[in-house]
Image 1: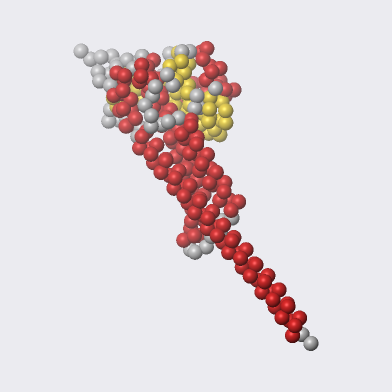
Image 2: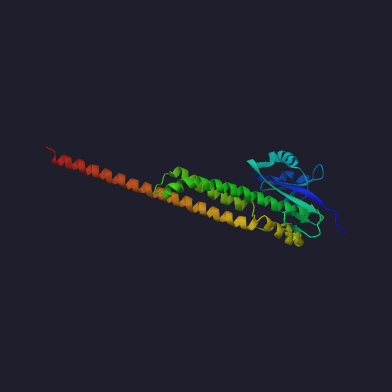
Length: 261
């Protein structure tokens, strides 16, 4: 006998650096690491995360964006353009996991299972945002590196220092907002869902992408620090040259005064 299944869309939006979920707790139960916003018109469900993410299940993108607009007063450091990730869920599958097409297979639609999917996809959205941000930083470093390969250093300190600050800030945000490689706290209450989350984490490559981000952050820091050191060394040499020229000028002036008739 075939099980009756239902296919639902999932939308994850990274809206801001932080979402004040405390003001929203009256809308639904708090699950470990997630806030359920309850059922939406049309039967969909929504989950909010304090690190600025909103995930809806069983709604259209337009409905998700409308809900995001309602959350705007509770956002801190909202992104200019929200990061968007999508997936598909099949409810009523005989076995849980992810099929070859990337569709998530669930036995039922219990809040714990849906929250687990929501958190995994929200983490993927965070990683995508971090990856794009670091890619922009690396692009900005390409010009001074190209000059360095030609034996020139044309980037002033006032431009290098912000890059170092940006790299440090990116590292702080990526680790302080959400540990993308860690297992959800929800699994403490539902250890039977650990295999499902492991499959989702592997599908979205959460651990591998987190490690890659850490490597890129370290590379940006090292490049920025090297450029800064080279710039400071050049400045010191120019200062030394200026002192030598000043002394030479003073000596020349003194000698001229001695030999002048």
